[in-house]
Length: 406
Image (cartoon, helix red, strand yellow):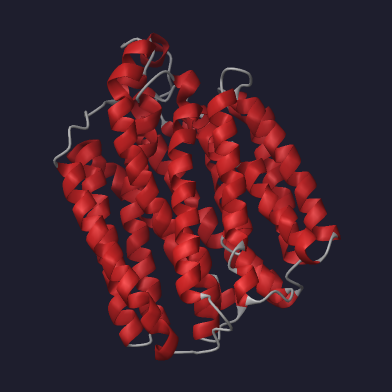
């Protein structure tokens, strides 16, 4: 096994390339918060109907995670990433005829295809970053990639928020949908170019064998389902992704619901992203130097639970701010769950990664439930859904990740 210092020296360049990848698909992912609010106005949708944006985008992870694992076994990590970018480009291109035909279902199809491409990318890039270096600093490397993702999200809010949610924005149908044509054509071109660059780059092909210890080869289970740390981690990631969408993608719509204008509410997702970015930066500095990834996860969930209560008992901007600050609280979650869940999987690493990617369906299903609660009860009380989500992740960070057998 290559020593840690050698890995750091050899893999700085590849991690920078993967960081650029995370920037691009972070941009595509986080623009959903603007699209949810924009389509709700443009098509006169209910809260439940508008959350179909998140459903169409994230449900593709569940549909394609296992096939993506099979694809990666044939193509390897690098070619799989290139293929994922090309599939994303097909999805972004569909936005053009969707706008011309004023078709919300066609937009949803485009989002689903973008999600398929992202499934391949995520299935390849997260374990790639985990394997490129010692496991104890895996959360630090994934935090670096998270920074690229969140910076891209902030850029997407500035660009698309300014394009789609400026002013009163009362226009509906074709008059407003024309705004998405040019930016999505540009985005299509960027994805195609990046696919070519990745395909012909010098990214090294790594193997799960690099992630194995001698114990992995002699004392590991014969089924991926026999790893409790993985199975419980899949559920934790399901809860996390749903919570991230609720605090990030739906906060603009929440602002609208409690009386904020477009020009005010369009900045709310940026607040959540700034919190996430601050949390990732702190993680890079502190993990594992001063705090373990599991302790960072525990403290983050305790803070998230307190902020949820704060959002429920306050009004106006104070409630919005509590939701936005959850970005900082949940920042350690994604970087910590991956190495904890994939620990000692050995030859099951790619399949385990695929199962974790399937858990991103939390971003598809939980927003639908939140949208239903918003319409049926109230926009504020719908956020009580976060309490059991954060509670379970706290359980995983305290007990669940330690389990080695059922």
